[in-house]
Length: 307
Ligand code: CP
Ligand code: NVA
Image (cartoon, rainbow, N blue to C red; front, side):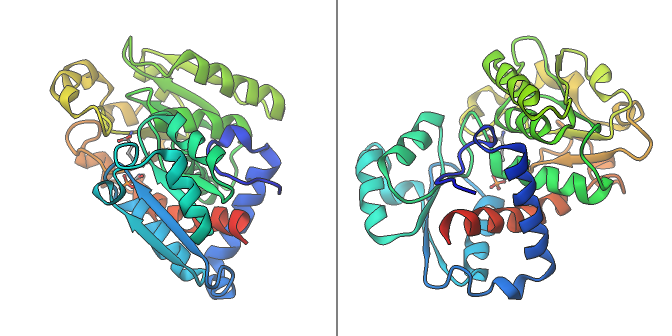
């Protein structure tokens, strides 16, 4: 696989995503076999937003591969204020073997990748969250033993997570339905990109957008949701509650999905808002398997790019 960066699932072919799943499963089964795979290598981890899972899984992951993560908190480097993205990239390539970045604009992530010669991994931008979707589809595959032909229903904000899930579906043959309130649907360019990906992969995934959460959830194999106000939208959180209320994943919505449907959430969850306790704590919920798989999926990405 000849890739320098991991910025979007769109950049990876269906076959390459399959290879990442295979590697992630091997790493998960026999982590000790990879204990020295990235010995002595360092990953700079730039965070412009908060994180639990992304930070801990990247830092633990690189450590388990024999390397070291360097956490750069928002205030540490003050990206774009203290120093330009270009200059940060040009410095880091002199010392480190890879960069993971969590930031706002997607162009900051792509700009960093253009500036630097070392691999750049997207740990979430306003537009995409590819590491999340990779771990999510790995989790679905483990539980359902297949991806092609499954129906994945995302209800809520047509945000970064929804965008990456559409791409993951397109590349693996799973139909992705996104149900969002009017004005909060995924950007039409992202829907079109996923549909192009689906045509290119020839796996037959339908990428559908609706305003009706029940239509999306109908006969679904997977029901997925995310917070209604993403990081950076905190000031809108009260007004969004009113708009998104009917998109809550509760027992009534789950009853429209298949009886053995899985419930997924990228986390953090706002319990009682986008999902009820009853659903997130039910046997159908695999949210902590998903969180665990962030570790294995990202180790596969680091190994592929940084070896
Ligand atoms: N799902 C996810 O990316 O979690 P964090 O924001 O805690 O990293
Ligand atoms: N959409 C959320 C995902 C958090 C992992 C956000 O961007 O805040």
